[in-house]
Amino acid sequence: MPVDVPTFIQENAQRGLRFYEEGLGGDGLVARTIREARQLAEGYTVESKPKRMAAWFARHESDLDAPRNTDTSHPDWPGAGAVAWLLWGGNPTEKDPMRAAKWAERKAQQIDNETERTNPMKYERRTAQQTVELREEGDSLTAVGYAAVFNSTSQNLGGFVERVAPNAFKKTIQEADVRALFNHEADALLGRSSNGTLRMMEDEHGLRYEIDLPNTTLGRDVAELLRRGDLTGSSFGFRTISDSWTQTEDGYPLRTLNQLAIRDLGPVTFPAYEASEASLRSLAESKELTIEEVVEAAETNSLNDIIKPKEEVVPEEPTERHSEGPSASSFIR
Image (cartoon, rainbow, N blue to C red):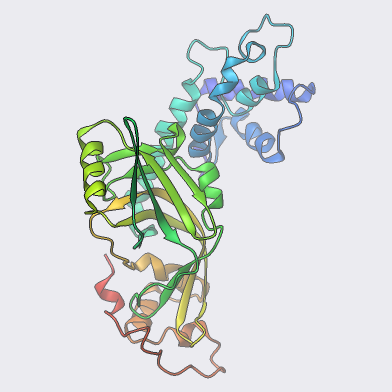
């Protein structure tokens, strides 16, 4: 759904496009930036743009240190950085150059809140039973852990198991402004990726994170709990961008998470790998079934009837390592 943008962002984009057409944009601009700048110049953008704008401005705030990007009387004005800022809807010469970034952040939060309110089942949570370390250097306290482990088969989620594919977080690490939260609580903020107090990276093992714990009551409390070994797991909240349904080596229904958009991550008191109705929604859509039909199949351990073509033989019951577990309905919230 299109999102209207303020007049000042529209005018900034128009100005940036004029500079770009004069060949002043440098070599780093990509086609998507130009395409979306033209949308901004017409007064609208796509729903994903405000969140990406906020993250982009945070990453490129250092451009403001160069006079060729902020001083219109400089002989090299406008620098490539200034043109890029304008194309993204900002204006590095304004009294408050972060004006567009602040609007984008507010609008992104508004969109997220509305999405959560109208489509709460699209958000899911997953955990990793991995040790969370506390690193202490002088007065600095950093929590280090893994929010997800690649290619690790989950417990039985009520008729299926799940794995996270390598590179599932690559895009969201680059674009999203992720919050580090304790126990997924919005008022228990520990860090934020756009500020650099939360850092995320993928390695061969999984999604690794580092949180510079704040010098607040919450930050000190979390540090002490980590120091004592009371917190032993991590969790992340996300939306699924892309997943696929196949089977494990022994024929059990398998959901693979291929691309995810992270909203938050951090240490949790009770790591619990829970499924939700959202886990089954993509399968229902791909097979043109109702969500109720897919949930019923999960409850009766017959998801293979949906995943496999009807003419193929349905595999035997799973081996013991995929214990029957609770039914899907016990997970759905």
